[in-house]
Amino acid sequence: MLNPIFQNKIKIYSYILIWVMIAIAHFSILFLFYDINFNSAISDSVIFNTLYGIFGISLWYIVRYNDIDNLNLLNLLINHLTISLIITALWLSAGYLILDNFITHQGNYELFLNRSLPWRFIIGIFFYISFIFIYYLVIYYSNFQEKLINEEKLKTLVKETELNVLRSQINPHFLFNSLNSISSLTISNPEKAQEMIIKLSSFLRYSLSTNEKQKTYLKDELQNCLLYLDIEKIRFGDKLKYEKIIDKNSEEKLLPNLILQPLLENAIKHGVYESTEKIIITLKSYINKEYLIVKITNNYDSDILSDKGERIGLKNIRSRLRIIYNRDDLLKINDKNNLFEVTLYFPQ
Image (cartoon, rainbow, N blue to C red; front, side):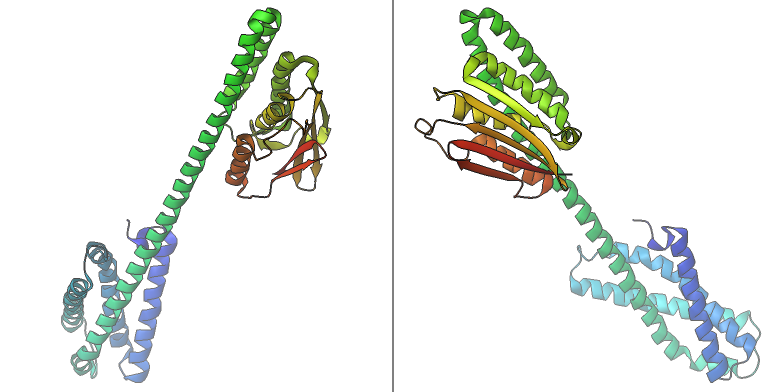
């Protein structure tokens, strides 16, 4: 990780500004409270604070070397205690030598410089602790942010994997049923079998082209659903009827791709298969506030229908809605008076 002080210009300027403020406070204390003349006070302030400003930058690399995760607490304290004594001694020695040998002073400054070494040593330790604390805080925050990003990436990966698994459960299921139907029609009605193959190929082409997309427009999804219903219409003839009541404004709204076909498949499997009466499947869509609402309704023969539990198609759709929208209340089922209705709410 790059030294946080050099990550951008704002941090560099902020670091310089902080040391300028410390230097001004340092000068003010010497000049106003210790009766040090102006030149000596400003020299003392600039030299000592500039030196620690430089040392402070280098402390970053000491913190990176003394990683909290790789050292026990005792070793960490011993390392920092030793380094703090060395750094403080170097700082005081360098400042003392420069001020004593290269800068001319007046008055009692020489005496003050010698007597001030003990409290300067305490200030040096305080600077060291402050730098170490801030640098460890920066590392902790950076690691925390990186952890959050990695967790988010992992969640996205898991979500994509779950969606792919759910989609893979839909397409083969429908494909096997359709191929069985085509197989039956090949002998009894070859022309309808051919028509069914053409529609099936169009349906699969749509499925493959949208497989990588998470959402699609309702009009495209409806077109695909009608292909599916046409295929089943060829198979069941007059026993199956379907109708659509579509609000034009809803056609341009988004919903997860291939999410309606399993509902139609359920309606046919649990309504048309066993019934001796005509089954009507109704597709209805409209907009209500911030939701695109799609209802799929079918009648069924209650004397024949035995399995009223939630089917695999409904479970898959509920799971997909939970993954995509992070909500559990977007699918509602109403089973009353031989009428089975599924309502889907798609937030826009």
